[in-house]
Structure formats: structure tokens, C-alpha cells
Length: 112
Image 1 (cartoon, helix red, strand yellow):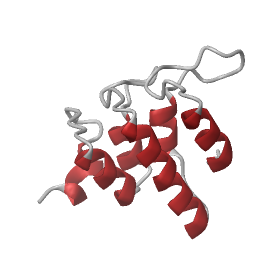
Image 2 (tube, helix red, strand yellow; image 1 turned 120 degrees about the vertical axis):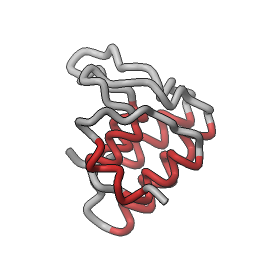
Image 3 (cartoon, one colour; image 1 turned 90 degrees about the horizontal axis):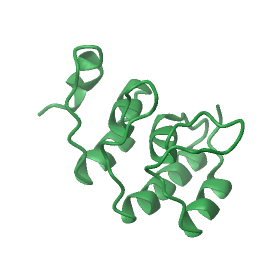
Image 4 (cartoon, rainbow, N blue to C red; image 1 turned 60 degrees about the vertical axis):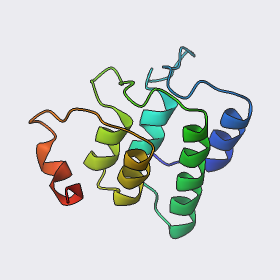
């Protein structure tokens, strides 16, 4: 799946609840924060746009512990997608999701 920065920016500016699952027909019911954190960017420009959108999302002070239907938080999604910039952004914002053994290997690189 490709990160659509312009659409995400418009939704955040319009006050979308980024920590709530979507209930629109045909959506995956994954909160936008979790979805954005886990999506890969294919270019440096997309990566910068993704970080800018996530920063906008975090400015709303969302619940960082919100989970998708599979139990993943934004922090877990970012770690699984191997995106250190997003992991660090979420950690600085206060994400403290307990890591289950299922995701332990993804977090070793972020420990001091």
C-alpha cells in the first residue's frame, strides 16, 4: 500500500480522529495513526511527507496505545515496517506500548 500524503494531510486538517478506526464502507478499520506509521514510503520525498503528516497527527495528542484489529499499535507497525524515523518520532511522543515476544526482535535496534 502506498502512503497518500495529500489525502492524509486534508483529513488531519479537517479534524479526523486519527486514533479511531474508520467505519467507512470498504475500509480496513485500522486507525489512521497505525496505518500511517506502518506504511512504507518509496521515495525520500514520500518519507518526509509521511513524517510531516505523522507529526500533524501527533499534535492532536491521540491515544498512542490504540490498536488495529490485529493488536498492533502505531509503534509496533513502525517497528515491523523497519522505519526508525517513525519509531523514534512515536517514542518521543510518548508511545510506551508493551512489546510482546512476537515483536521483540523488531525493537532490539531501538534500545539504548
